[in-house]
Length: 139
Image 1 (cartoon, one colour):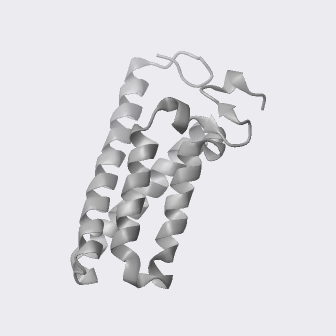
Image 2 (tube, helix red, strand yellow):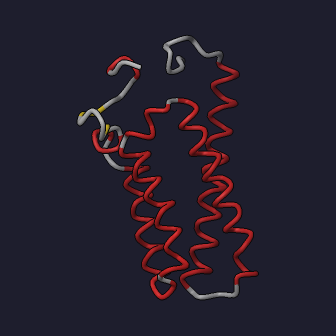
């Protein structure tokens, strides 16, 4: 097991990081499902607000994790599309009549970011090529 600097990572650290990130992802998905359902079915905010908080807090932590791990995440499509999802969340107030459509579109973007081909997710908009590791670009 190696980290991004190709330095060996202890098995203990590997498992702690893996379980931590998986737990954060699970909390994020639960939060998205709960708040998304509340938004799409126009339920009272009090019924889904805690899910919204879970989605936002876990999302911020996951995004921070990626940026700290490798800032290049911000220039790869996986980072750009994640930032686009955050911008779309900001439209909830301006176009409140389209909240369900926004939730669906944000979920579709999430699927692309999480499960799309590596060539798409790792594409750097700055370098106009797929960036898999730090060795491929300087800085």
